[in-house]
Length: 175
Image (cartoon, rainbow, N blue to C red):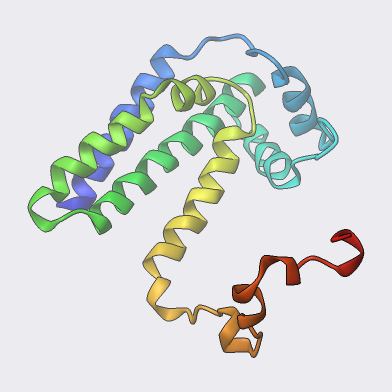
């Protein structure tokens, strides 16, 4: 049942994103990013290597213009964000409210201004946020498997800091 609703939501959101997308390149760095994706160049100083490599793979899709293909990457990344939100809400919500909470939460995120505007633009934001949210969801779902390291567990004496904050500051700064 969860998968059926998830697929219906993803296809509906993609249809609306495709219907509302402009046919032009977009704003800000879209031209530089599109050129870098097509030529495997560096769009600006950070470079965004994962995005450029993924976008370059999308430019080899045999149909549509380069602009359409790169907007499709942004739209699919935004849908991935919405799908991960659906799954995360499903995982965290009480059993009675899982379905409605997941649907409302994922649709509210998909059609929020910040996600919707970037889904219809050639930018790295949706792809980067998809990767970060995927890591966060993975962390939340596997949290019990990790051992949290605290200063006292590694032999660090926290009593020094508890007595007086001035002991934390090197002597030459206290005069």
